[in-house]
Length: 333
Image 1: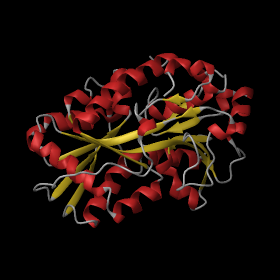
Image 2: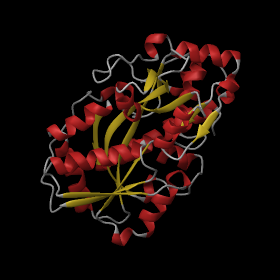
Image 3: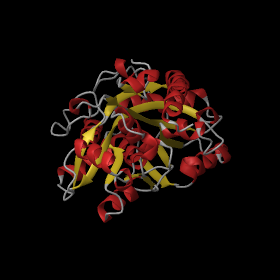
Image 4: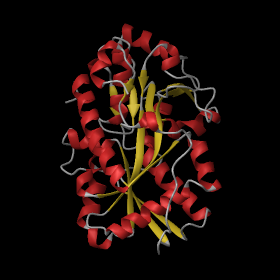
């Protein structure tokens, strides 16, 4: 993995998954144990409908129930505070929330570093990292912007007109990724105009309404709409084209070295017993072997990643250092 400090010399950006180079695409080590007595899971989603958190939680619940690993799944969207409202709720109701898993991703690290909220992953019980989702830059089907090179040319001409929408607050993930890509083109990322929305669904609506010219999001949030002809994906931040999206180009093939994958995973309430936390991680591990999960994974273009328990915690500590260094490099801290 290349050092983040080499970003200014146009090296490949490896912002997330500190061990992403070791991830086997589409494969995991699944020596999961029995899932214990877990019959149902309540998924707490820190953002609104239509975003990456929402899709990950509902897709995971779909796979677990359709495969018979659990009987029922329920969902609760709780927006606010850049995800902080849901985190605070899980902490405050910890004694009554042992049946709840909260989905989260790289923003739990980013927003803690920027002091958007006082809590961090250390205040929760990390259960497992489950997937990685590459970044995507999206336009409407009728947009005159046809390629990433058009974005770069437009930015050079007038950066104020190249407005990016995103489903997270300023300075967070959907802002960070295009800023890194713009910097890799030798341009000033601080000039990038970013319009924040509450989750990916509203950000997509902002793009379709014309409020923004471009959308910075996860591939999983745009792939189905792209296949339906509603939007076009200009580029993704994968190192090479994906089998689930073979027609979507990468920044790398267009001469921009930015590579980025946003992990997503699940957290339990603080004070959750080790046995219950392990039971949750085991049932998520068993999910990967099911056809129901492969259906969910492939339609979103996700990468399978399984980091349970202590491995997940160690990864989060390492990412905190890497993402912090990147944010300082870009001027976000």
